[in-house]
Image 1: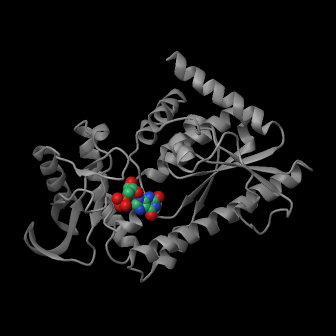
Image 2 (image 1 turned 90 degrees about the horizontal axis):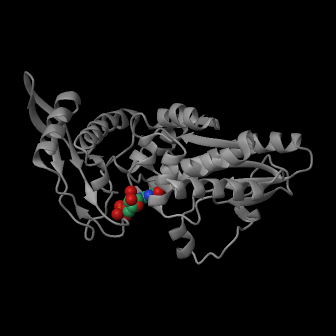
Image 3 (image 1 turned 60 degrees about the vertical axis):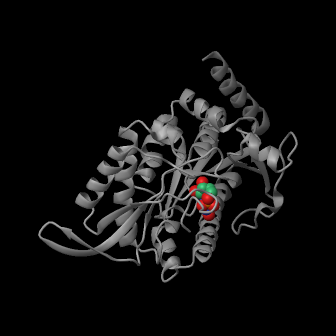
Length: 329
Ligand code: XMP
């Protein structure tokens, strides 16, 4: 529509004004819609003076990394650096079962990996730029976040952002927030306007620690692969049923330390149960368990137990929030 075209053009223009020719920008991509749209706008504004960084922590759902690496890049022409850090994250998570401990480890490793990439990209590039020493950090902050944090108009410098080894000491960091006047639904429309892949534009919210907090028990590569398969089936069937936009989030949780007896194929099995956790919500503060149609649940259950050998039982979580949280950890 006209207004969307205008919003996009205005944002691109204002980012161009802000950055001018003062330096280079870096943007972390999470696979989610906010960072993708923010990056796409800045790319339109300054082209290859923007570099995006995607940290592959190995905790993403099936095909999500490819969506960013291949489809997002194809749609935007963005300069992307993918850091394959799976081994590093899994090593750090070995033996850890406590949810908050997992979060802490994933958060810590993420910052380290991101900062190393930042230093590599900006260190060289800004040295080449000879003197123009502003590093712009693109963030997908939305209007509700701005209001919540009491932030006023304009942008803030964040010199205190971090002490990254490998960067010039006097390097200034400045935030670029192309979405700070927008609500989530507007961000999706802008994303569509910019031609981003539907899987990214309409993606459900997904936690930073990824599948790491959807495996109850230790996180291992093998368990992640099992969960990825089951999760992909659940999402696929939800999409086929045309229910994506009615559901807020649809976590699938692997009870990795629980075993259940089943009969599959020729004999008894001793596998794992999985939990489907579809919820409806406005803002994740409260949520209700989603009344998915029985036939959809049936297809998901049949497919998962047929196609994922290690899973022999599918359950549905019918707890609202409160008292249950959306995630199990
Ligand atoms: P809960 O489980 O507390 O989740 O009802 C509320 C919303 O927050 C997401 N969530 C997280 N997002 N890092 C994130 O970026 C986290 O550690 C985290 N834990 C929960 C959750 O998916 C839901 O949207």
